Image (tube, rainbow, N blue to C red; front, side, top):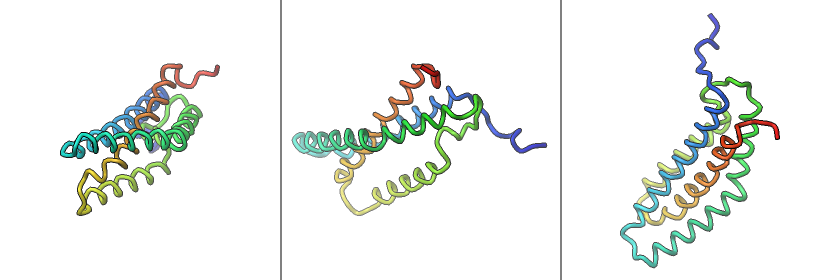
Length: 147
């Protein structure tokens, strides 16, 4: 009995949707944490931290994550019509994900006030959320249709 029989195969459409939901879900989670940590701050400080996080998120989105999302979309389009459920990210990306989760856990356990983490969390969360829109746009266009 071949092992591929146990591989959970799904369509490219489903993989594109999973990728978008994961990117936007993680981005939203990070931004919600940042906003929660900003709650005890003065409104002026909130505005400054929020503006810094937004500007940095736009920069990280423009020069980093949008390119990663585009590369991942091209990779997904090159897959056969049915592919492994876990192929929504490249295998190498899973190592980066593990590193980022570990870094987040490490940062949250440092003996510093959480509001200092608001800017990096808003930055990464915002960039992830904005980049997730590429996946939804690809779904809207019909996944991997040639134009």
